[in-house]
Image (cartoon, rainbow, N blue to C red):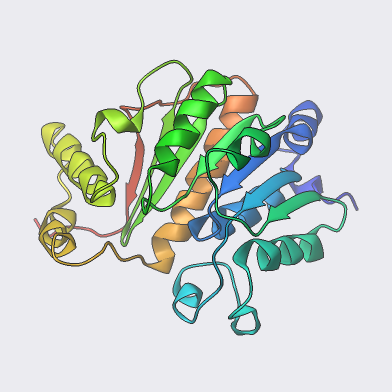
Amino acid sequence: MDRYNGNKIYISQDEQEKMQQTRILIAGAGIGSVIAECALRIGFEDLVIVDSGKVTEESLSCQNYTKTDIGKFKAERLAKRLLRINPNAKIQFHNIEADRENLQWLVKDVKIAINALGFKTDIPFVLDELCSAKRIPVLHPYNFGWGAFLTITKPGSYKLSELSSTKENFDLVLAEYVSRYCTFWNMPNRWMDRIIDTYKQYSISELSIASWVVAGHCVNVMFDIITGKEVKYFPKFYFSSLRGDPA
């Protein structure tokens, strides 16, 4: 039986082939590890993974690794996992830190980029600028615990750097942006409003729930992009909250 036989009532043969031929850059193999497997299983078979980090015990709580991966490079372990799922896939991995020089060749022939780099430096902004110049849409997935956030920057249009021009506390800037937006449109997420104050004292933490939900958002959006369907670009976004607020 064909690997993608179960996709047929949802995805045409032509669409399936487009997915298989679309090269995706996954910059950051934390939340990117979950997105990568979701993408591979539906049919995106050409993936480029870059991350210099190693798997830790903490990684196991919300990333796509196992205990035997601890102490090993995330990009390499993720690539091996994906190839066990589909040995015929084209999986490139690079155990390096993304920088201004290597991003130039990492984006070669890429059709969509996933910017899951942490804001320890300004490189996430650099990736956005480079992709915009090369007409590559960029997905920005975030795990807000009980909520999954995704926004997409369109080449030549608005960029996330318009929210803040510096990397300092950028995760918090995004969380506050989502909260204000939802409140403005009468869709408040009170649980998120409450924990934003905690974010101000500690770094943003993640739950496994949102990692898997945002992976689904990413794969859905990538499918829509390559098949010419409508996509919500930044400043619009996708946000799924699984935490119901009391009335």
